[in-house]
Amino acid sequence: MSKKIVILNGSPRRMGNTSALVQAFTEGAESSGHTVAEFFLDRMDIHGCKGCFGGQSSRDCPCVQHDGMDQIYPAVRDCDIIVLASPLYYWNLSGQLRTAVDRLFALEEGGENLLRGHGRGSVLLMAAEGHGFADVLQYYDHLMEHLNWKNLGHVLAGGNGDAGEIKGKPELQEAYELGRSM
Image (cartoon, rainbow, N blue to C red; front, side, top):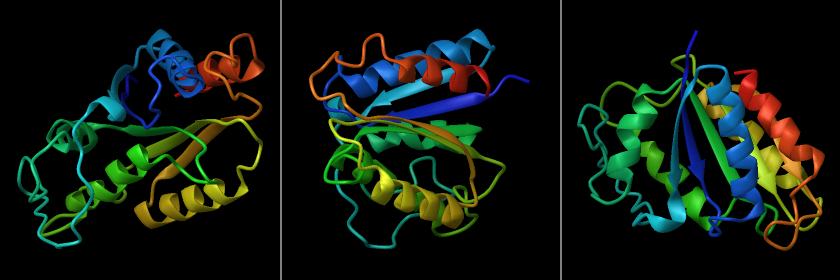
């Protein structure tokens, strides 16, 4: 059965190692007949959450702010799988991705909770210079628990500092296979 997959790419480098993981995952998913929509967050105008609790899940654009998230909300509402892709920054997701994840909260407010559950699954794709993924995995596991999303797996590619350094490494094939398995 074909699935709708949304990728939130939090890398600031369009041709970086995280984007290479995203490309491999996308190729695998599309080879299995899935539809993939990628949002390259660094090129989008997305403001931080105001913490106003003014969101209304019933609106087309549920947040009181209108910016790049207005493109993301409808895709997330309708998707089966959300891929969080990021370089490892200070043992966590990039600021670009954290900001978008924070703003998804508007889909939980003021009516039907359109974010939690709904049979969604999630994947985590990360590249890093080092190998210290324990803290971000703990955060990701807590997020999956809160959202009641199924953790469909992750690819964590350490040892990739310079853009393009991941080329030829086994994590690219792992990302492809993970995408294909969706």
